[in-house]
Image (cartoon, rainbow, N blue to C red; front, side):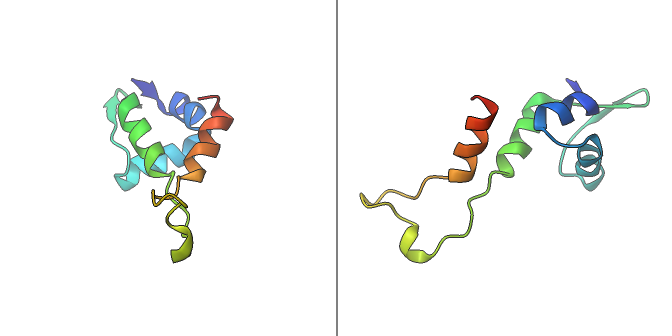
Length: 83
């Protein structure tokens, strides 16, 4: 379980962004006293959601071998995080 500041640090976001996600219902949390705590799996799920594919022209959606185009946004973000 992560606190809002811990989740913000892990997500490289401002703590207020995490609070907004909680208020909007995008991120589940539990209240312990006055503090919201977030399950790591829930945070990971929303972060993966934010790695949406960029819109591509139809001709670019498939690679030369016919496989779907890679999600370059996700690849770059994870390389910057050291994953």
